[in-house]
Length: 203
Image (cartoon, rainbow, N blue to C red; front, side, top):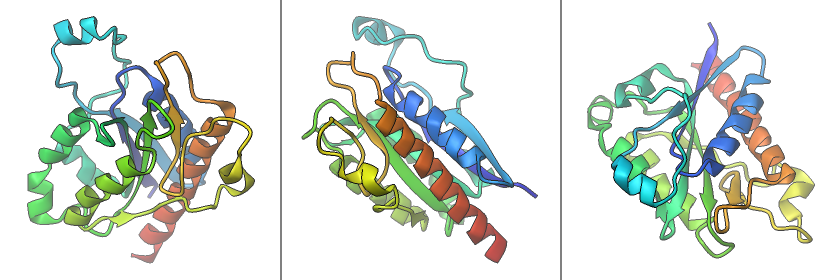
């Protein structure tokens, strides 16, 4: 039976979604892994999104909290809001009380990826503060550490991401994830999928 890895994200302007697509490719590159993209529900009304110049959502399916129970592992992604995960993703996690009560997610591995507006905008704090959500569910946080190799030490170009997980800088919204950031996202997907597969095989 295939190992199921769910890449679950919220993206307002497409930066997190672009990373998610690459993470899926990385996860799917591991033999025996079925990787699937999901987005969480939007909580803002269309009128507000229009004023914020947010583009229409993609056709990636919207996940329901109980869908999480079907997966063997996860990679959760979101933009930062004042150094923490966006409220839309927090609202989704707040609705997982039933899974918490039955500990359906306990022992399952999960990684985190993110997008921030600037270099001091929360590349580490966004992931660090999100770990509390995993802890209460008894999930196993899987950081990428420095497994990405030389790409972790890039100093000549702007590069998002950290040992916590893949990341990108959106700037004023016009900057898109760089090739190196996309490579790191692919690596994260592959890395977490391989660990998820090992854990499932050992169960």
